[in-house]
Image (cartoon, rainbow, N blue to C red; front, side, top):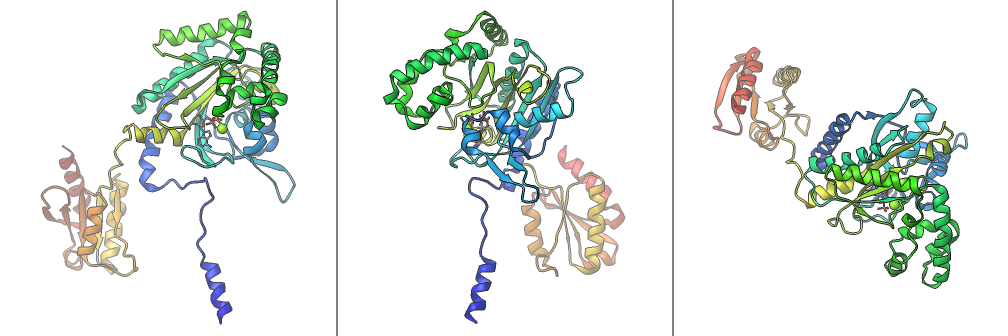
Length: 441
Ligand code: ATP
Ligand code: MG
């Protein structure tokens, strides 16, 4: 007996979602839809095409694309072995490497450059906190096959336009140039000498990076190392003429478009594939997670992923962080209005008539909720009316046995005068349209 009881408890035990992976609740749906709508318009305005890649890729896509010595590949990826065929797979932690994999595989830039965009969930095993989740959503763009500073500037202008469209103020642009591999090699030697001289001040992570990827030490968020990092040799001082020319041209185009930017010599980005221009959009409103978007040029990546060498650049934005910024800065849109019509009935024949009317209204583009009794039987008109009110509907259509006997329905104004009129069943659609048009004038 007791054993049976225990079994039942086990079976009915609550199962929670995975830590750091959030449900996006209906209350926030209108805000997400608004952001997605603005992003869709933005990409259209600049001629970007949508590309949707799978959420799971071969692990090698990210190992090769992002680089082995990065936070993401070293410790943040959700990787697993396919139980059936032993393939090494990974839930995508970012979009670019997968987009490049797809572009190569599908020959997408065979006939010339392409502007692409994507959006969707990304997965990183990080410590969950405000603005940092294990499943989060990114929007990103990639401009593939363009070499000039014009496209670097264009993708940055897109960011500024986006903040303007969303009503976000105080989002600042920080920019840097990572030059080319040979320039970084000379800088790297200087950097290693500098940090070796001050090795005692390096934290454990940075001591390891000193051997593997010293540039990334500049990216450290450890407050105790900030003064040391501030005094480190600057990559900008090691750039050759061509790199500087590219960087100057990007800045001139930004200036001509009234986009202020701050050069941040410590901005190196967390991924390995960047060269020349890198940038981030930052805000002071979100605490430690103040970077809402980042990107740059990644000319070496396509070849490194096995494609024919072609230049490219792009950026990605964290949707949760942007929505949070919209929330704290009060620029969120009003919640979406409710439905237009709420249909009430008393079950049986009246339900059949109500359902047919509801379908007719929906076919005419009128958003309609049909009352469905929670107990599957019926409910008083009084309790149905409460639901109708809460639904946000402008009008209720009421079909009770008395109305049905006369082939009629009642239409009740829920927001204005509360007026109620009888209408023949086959005239309900016309009367509802008249009422809705009338009330929107
Ligand atoms: P951070 O330094 O904050 O870890 P990152 O450099 O790892 O950011 P990117 O890989 O450049 O981030 O991703 C682009 C954007 O995606 C970030 O600017 C941020 O807005 C968002 N983002 C990254 N990681 C997360 C996360 N774990 N949760 C929510 N948003 C994230
Ligand atoms: Mg990160």
